Image (tube, rainbow, N blue to C red; front, side, top):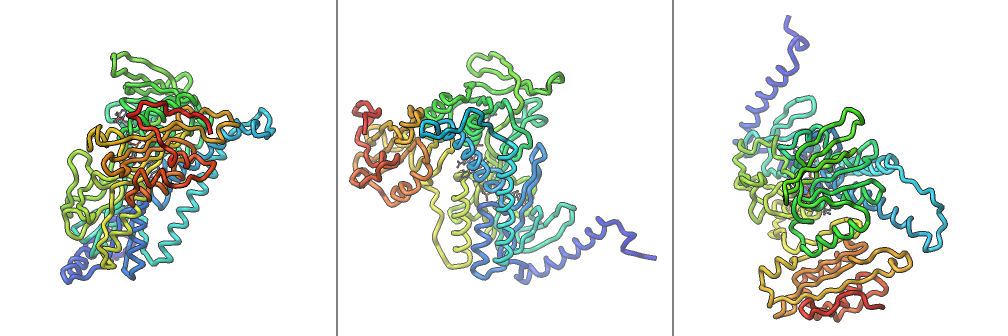
Length: 517
Ligand code: FAD
Ligand code: NDP
C-alpha cells in the first residue's frame, strides 16, 4: 500500500517544490506576489531596509543564513557587524584600552598591586553573551514589525522568485515584487599558500576563539588587521603584523604611518614588504611554522606561532545567489554587484546594498542608511538618494584614527598642491600627562581649499577619535570652512578642541609639535 512514510523525504520535497513552482509562476503572471519586498541577507543593510519597508505597511520577508567559517565558526541573525565585526571588535578594543588604563592607574593614585591578570575566556564569554542578546533582539524586532524571517539560504529562480534552502536542505519558493540583495561579504583566504585553509583563522573566528590566541601572526595591514593586532597586543599577546605594502591602504598615507608607528612603540611587531608562503603544523609542539618571503630581496624567513590570522580583505558572499537566473550583473574584478545611484541592479525590480555592491564603502552606517533610503523610495514616494561622499570612519587601533573627506594625497591629486592649504598640529591629551602615556603620534590635519577655505578633509589621531569626529563630520557635510572652524569656541580641556585651534600650515614649515597649554 502507498504510504507517505515509504517515500524518501527528498522525493516529497522535490514534488512539493515542483508544485509550488507551477503555482508561483501562475501567480507571478497575474502580477501577484507573496511579498512586496524580499530581502536576502539579515545584516546591517538588509535588516534596516526590511524594517523600514514594514513600517509602510508592506509585506516583507528577510532571509538570513550563515555558512560556517572555514574553521567552522557559526553565529546568529544580524550579519557581520553584530557577530564578527564592529561590535565584538569594539568590545575587545575596549578590553585592551582598559588594560592600558590599569597600567597607568597607579599614577592617578590607584593601588591595584602587581598581579593584574587577564582572562581571554571571560572576555570571549561576555562578548559572546552580548552578541547573542543582539541576535535575539533582532529576531524580536522583526517579529514585532511583522517582518517574516526565514533562517534560510536564498537563491534566484527568476527575477521575482527566490528559492529558500534551510539547514535541513528543505526547499521552498517565495515570490517578491521587489528583491533586495544585502548578503555582505566574508573574509578572503589566500589561494596559493599551503596550510592557510587548514590552520589559519580569520575575523570570523577571532572573537569567539575558545582558547587564548597566544603568539599571533596577523597577515594584512588594513582596518581589520591593525585593529585586531592592536587589541591582541593590548591584551598581552605577542603579536606580529605582516605587511605586504602600505599601512591602511586607501587612507591618508601620513596618518597610516603614524598609526603603525604608535602600534610599534606599544609593542606590536611588524614584518614589512613580506608575504607568507607556507604554514604547517609542527608535530613536536603543535605550533604553526610559517615561512615568508621578503618582496624586497626575496629572502625567505620563518618563525613559529600559536595562531595565524588572515586579514587580507573580504569577498562578496554571492556564491549561493544564482544571480545568472535573474540576470543580475557583477563587476568582473571585484565580483561585487553593480548598482546605479538608486541601488538598482541591471534588473529593474532587483536592488543591492551594503558590502556586496561594487565601489562603495564597506561600513555599517552606510549599509543601514542605504537600506532605509531605498525602502523610503520604494514605498514612501521619496526620491532621496544615498550620498556615498564624505563618509566618516574610525580605525579602532590602540590610538584611534578617525577621518572624514579627502586624504592629503587625494586632495593634491584632485586640486593640485598649490590650491590646497593644510593646517596641522601634534598635541598632548591632558589625560596623557599624569599617566605619562606616549603622545608622539597624537596628530591632527585639516585640509582646505585655498580659494574659498572649504574644508576638504579632517584627520584626527588620538583618544576617542570616533567620538570626536562625528560632529565635525556633520559640519563638513554642511560645507564647513576654515574660518568657521577656527572661529568656533573650543571645549576645554578636551582633545577635540585642538581641531578648532589649528593655525600652523604645513607649507609654512613651522614646527607643529606641542608647545604647551
Ligand atoms: P552583512 O552584515 O555581512 O550581512 C549579510 C548577511 O547575509 C549575513 O548574515 C550573511 O550570512 C547573510 N547571507 C549571505 N548570503 C546569503 C544568502 N544567499 N541567503 C541568506 N542570507 C545570506 N563597519 C563599521 O562601520 N564600523 C566598524 O567598526 C566595523 N568594524 C568591522 C570589523 C570587522 C572585523 C569587520 C569584518 C567588518 C567591520 N565593519 C565595520 C564593516 C561592517 O561590519 C559591514 O560593513 C556591514 O556589516 C555590512 O553590512 P551588510 O548588510 O552589507 O552585510
Ligand atoms: P582591506 O581590503 O581594507 O585590506 C586588505 C589588506 O590585506 C591590505 O593591507 C592588503 O595589502 C592586504 N592583502 C591583501 N591581499 C594580500 C595577500 N595576498 N597577502 C598579504 N596581504 C594581502 O580589508 P580589511 O579586511 O582590512 O577590511 C575590509 C573592509 O571592512 C574595510 O574596507 C572596511 O570598510 C571594513 N571595516 C571597517 C572597520 C571600521 O569601520 N573600523 C573595521 C574593519 C573593517 P595591500 O595594501 O598590499 O593591498
